[in-house]
Image (tube, rainbow, N blue to C red; front, side, top):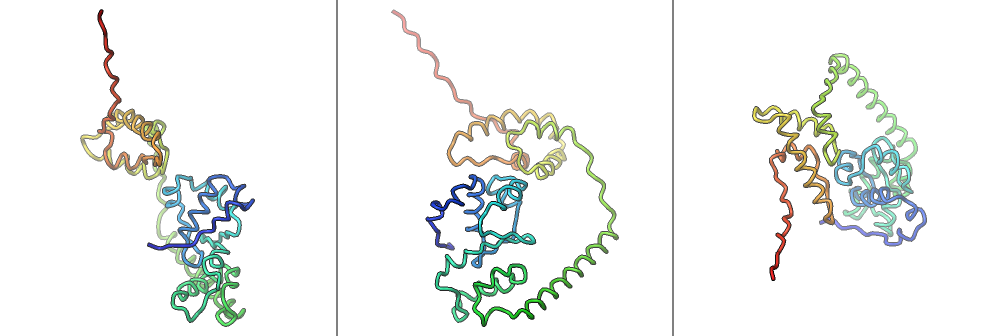
Length: 251
């Protein structure tokens, strides 16, 4: 299991204390998820699933409030991550540091701030860095050209027709998470001849009661509607708490 140092003094720093709970959670998540150089390729779907925070909130409210965290072209860089994990600096002769140095050099064209972690001998010259940037630009142009050509070949897909039955289902689910995945699961469920809209809707009260009961437990994780549909949970029956019969005493 991979282990890392953690800075317990961050809770004493004003900038961290002022963060809303969601931003604190995201910052701690990034410290665990980033690679050994402090980089992480943004995966909003995964974050949304694992943290229970919407992608819109992550982009608009959480990322911009994080100090020393830079976001560029779908990649996050935590500037002080290496300084804290490796206070003695990185050494090219240390095999354990080789992968970290390679990761820094790979992202250097995007994050010049990472150059401070490289020694003068390891850091590329300005001309070499510009050359790398030019090559990357050329590659991007080629990719854009290929994408444009592919778009011209492919006809635009027609927009999916609205599904009023699914909309009615979505209005009543207790946890509105990952709507597109839920829509796909809804369509797959209705392909089975024995499953109808009425059958699924009849199971919704059980879903609602089940989630209400689970939400009272510590460590509660919401059940996604797509999971509920894929597992055919509309057939579940929530166990109801039985009230003890009243006792009658006679003189």
